[in-house]
Amino acid sequence: MAGGNLNAPLGQRHEQPQVEVSIAPLGLPGTLVHPAAGQGIVLFAHGSGSSRLSPRNRLVAERLQRSGLGTLLFDLLQPEEADNRTNVFDISLLAARLALATDWVCSQELPDVPVGYFGASMGAAAALMAETLTRHRIAAVVSRGGRPDLAGVALPRVRAPTLLIVGGDDHAVIELNEEALTHLTCEKRLAVVPGAGHLFEEPGTLDQVVTLARDWFVPRLDQRD
Image 1 (cartoon, rainbow, N blue to C red):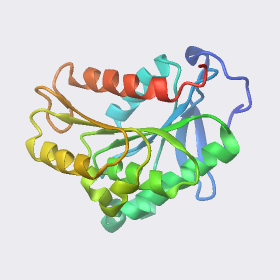
Image 2: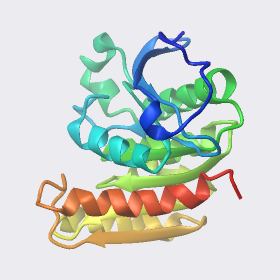
Image 3: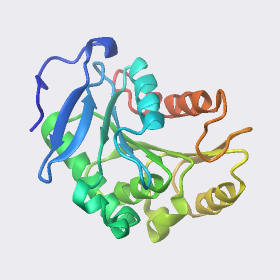
Image 4: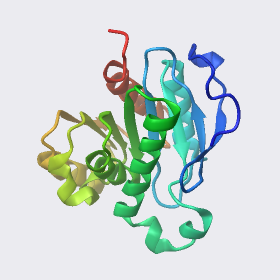
């Protein structure tokens, strides 16, 4: 159960504080920001060696909140699980945890609110696989510097509109994303950010990721139409 007042009326983004939550039934720690009225929430899946405290994902989340979207950043593994490197690279396990968090959001915290996934690195594969596992509809998926190819046989089953964002200088990952794109049968797009490496550390490149993600999520997670 979350701490704080999670039953407060939905309002504008700047009125919604971050709330530390514990995602049942495993008690996975997370940071939740409610969406503005009529808008959806984006669940983040981080890559190996990262956590809900990832500075890049936190920046993306904060910028999405400015558009009225809610966000949930959470740890996919318990600390003792993360100590086992096998778990860190287990896409099926990570996808199952994301599906679990989706059920928690949709069944307990924010029922009837559109949900999107934002996956980074291997978290992108977990997001795509989770989309095929969850019983809830996922409105959109965005991958940042992701390894969607690791979703394997799940790729053709993905239904949510999917945006793959890669850095223009991340040549090996561009090829992997191009190959994964051919297996996706949903609405899809590959966006290449010029001059960006795998982590989008170059000046201005992460801003471009935010713009691309926002423009993909907002119209698909908007209930006001």
